[in-house]
Length: 506
Ligand SMILES: Nc1ncnc2c1ncn2[C@@H]1O[C@H](COP(=O)(O)OP(=O)(O)OP(=O)(O)O)[C@@H](O)[C@H]1O
Ligand SMILES: [Mg+2]
Figure 1 (tube, helix red, strand yellow):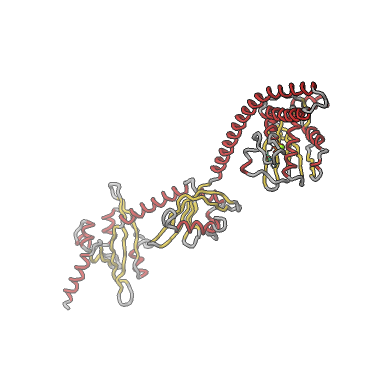
Figure 2 (cartoon, rainbow, N blue to C red):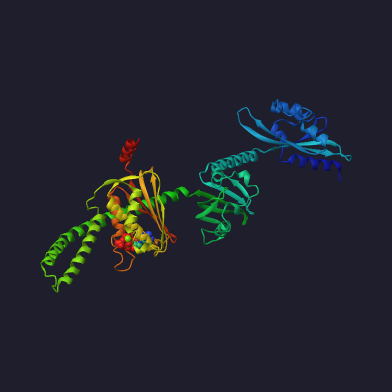
């Protein structure tokens, strides 16, 4: 082939390169320059060819920071190493704008491997650098969003290895992200839960494939504590392949506690409203029955006195009076429940009340097979209340406990002071059958009984409730279950009398 034609062809290629390019000798003299470079520098070939790169670029850039020392010169480096290298530079223009250049130096080697020429081409990488910066800024912003989220965020790779944990997740789980090196997502849930979560994530019917709608689960903290959380999750796909998973967690403890308190308050409100309306009803019935009953008893007694001792109707009259007296007892209890009966108060010790009540029923056969355990506090517990009525309350609690144990078991009577509430407390515990959940809200209702006909009227606890309230106290079920029940009776401590007595003793 004609040699001149060959050179012409190479020059054409060189000229048509889309990057500004020039060819340098090892002594930095520019031997050739392509059209793109001339356009970029806005000079003619004769301004460049035969000059050194320093002359040209110093004039062109007027840039004192050009890497032109022996150590920094990329041309020298290419000559030294015999391989290409590049430098990335941000060029600032007079108008304040800037752009990025990547200057690539490639050696042309002779047969011995020595660089005899170096090709320098300039690529404008401003677009790539701008995208890189946008990408970097977005990443940084996303990181900040994730880190500042109040919800715990956690991501893991396909094998379950934890890749990311934000600050809220570190607080929720109780360990820093750095401590998760040897952990997988299986370790952050109680046994079996991680599998269940993954199953739901993959289930199309459950929020769509790869998505977990808001779900309640338990997580496991560093201290081994199970915490209820509300979580959502997602599988992150790469070309249809599962690449990672992520979960967002919100602690439910506070919300559940508030919900429970609200529920309890609602139940209590309903219960006290019910007790109040039942009290009004009981008071109404008791008053209405009281008057005719007084008449029956009075006229019955009069007739009884007038009849001869052998009168054939005398036994029948006796039955009438007996039943009328039972009715009067019921009315008395109803009045006590509705807090309509009169009270006689005095100051006495709670322990004395317990001993006195026990003494009153001590001889009854029903005690024979029950073990009584007294756990009476040595603290001074004076209360100012109606002792007779409170004794009635204690006796009913004891009889109820013995009935619940079917007369076999341990009856424990515990007293103590609760200085926080200012109450003297008595707990009556049994090892009996417990109260079923469905009866819990009804045991204080008048006439609620589970005892067989004729055995209980169902007025014991309702009367106890009325008496406790009438004495500014309270009665409640502290605990109940298949192993027994504990009733708690609280009566205000009589601080005044206690102070007076301690002064007189002192
Ligand atoms: N300690 C207890 N263990 C289990 N259930 C109990 C206990 N105390 C009370 N109950 C339940 O509460 C119901 C109501 O008790 P309450 O004392 O008001 O009436 P009663 O004992 O049935 O009848 P009364 O006291 O009028 O003779 C009882 O029938 C029983 O079902
Ligand atoms: Mg009873």
